[in-house]
Length: 111
Length: 112
Image (cartoon, rainbow over all chains, first blue to last red; front, side, top):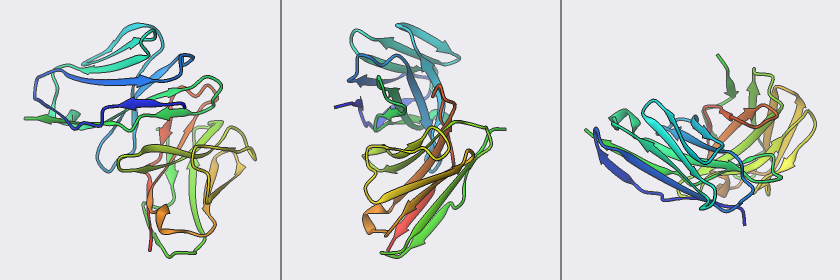
């Protein structure tokens, strides 16, 4: 069974805190991982991609990948109310032409 | 600015009707996808296409068909709409390397 799993939340953090979003995947052959953000009533948009073990930073966002543990996470530093959204983890499984999405984690940043 | 355009934002149909959802992309992308999104179930792939006239079943193709006669256009067809097909439908496109999906704004379909 090919799966991408996320805690559905909701996750609430105060403004200025670090939000930590987690994702596990079932296919050890997956080589690339993506985080999409989806505001309520809107379509998903890509915010981060990561291909190698370790950390990748982009502004307030850091993606972390641990292939041995089949675990990918997204950290949002200095969280803002505008970060309130559902965050979707996605990965293409080996041999597949499409991305598999997790069910998403709903994040609320409290002012 | 890149764009994936879905023909309708909201659509209301009756059980048994044939429904067409249209999607057009202007990025010359090879791949196009149709997902449906339901609360608690996330994004589920219905069909995708990696070339003109080519199609592949996704995770939940039953009750749906697709058509891709031109590279920029990918249509989702509900042959006989049923109430359990009430959902948000999202079209997406990507290059052949599949690195990044660009989504349309979605069509909220209600089948009564």
